[in-house]
Image (cartoon, rainbow, N blue to C red; front, side):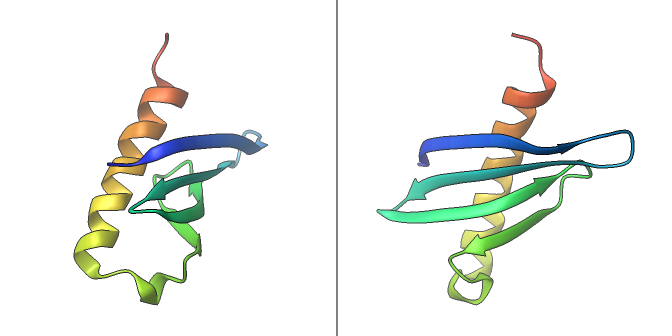
Length: 74
């Protein structure tokens, strides 16, 4: 399970929206950027250090959390 998930808006204009995010998973910090189209760019740890299964799982979690926090009304 992810813990201490934080995000902040970096860009917000008609063409592009971008957020940075960070969280902990298995006692390791992960950071990246989330884009309007749902794509993710990992900045920490390096993409090569994650297994494909772990990367798929974490991207799914980040996508769900961003949809919840950014796009849904609360």
